[in-house]
Length: 173
Image 1: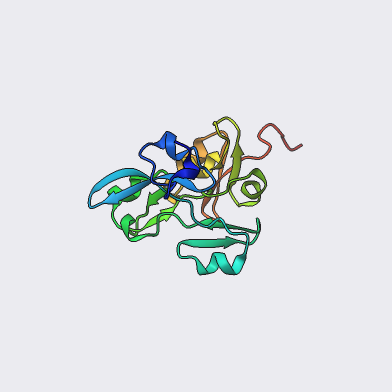
Image 2 (image 1 turned 90 degrees about the vertical axis):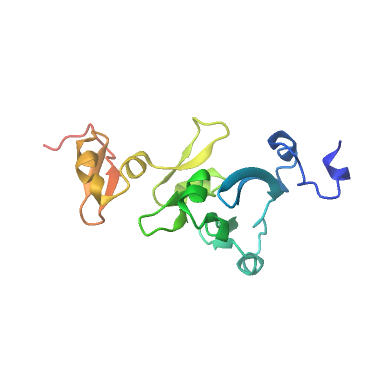
C-alpha cells in the first residue's frame, strides 16, 4: 500500500515499511518496562528554525551546523542501564545516567567534521558520523596506560583524554 494513503504513515509494522518514508518516520528502540522493542515512530526535530526547535521537547539546536537535532537517551524510558544500553545511540555512565554517545545525530559530513572528536565514516553503509578511534577505544582516564600503549594514540594529561596521533611517522631532528 502507498504510504501516502495511510492515515498515520508511521504506523508501519516492519523496519522495511518504516524505511519507505525516511523523511517522516524512523525505526527506534522503545522500552516497555524491562522489555525493549522496536517501533516505527514519527521523525522529530526536523525544523530549520531555531525557535521552533528549542520549543520542541527532546530537540536541541546545533549552532555550528544550523540544524535541529534530536536529543536521544534523555527520556524517562532510558532511566535504567538495560534500556539505555539497548539503544546504540546511548551509553550508561558511572553516575547512573543515560547520555547520548558522542557524534550521534549528525546527518551530514560537514556537521560531523565540525564536531569535536567526530569523523565521517564512509566505510559503513550508509556513511555515518562516528567518534574518532582513540577516544572511542579508551574513553576514560582509567584507560591512560592502554591509550599510551596503542601506537595510534597518545594520552593528553591536560585534558585527561586519549587522542589520535596526527603525524605518527614524523620524527624531530
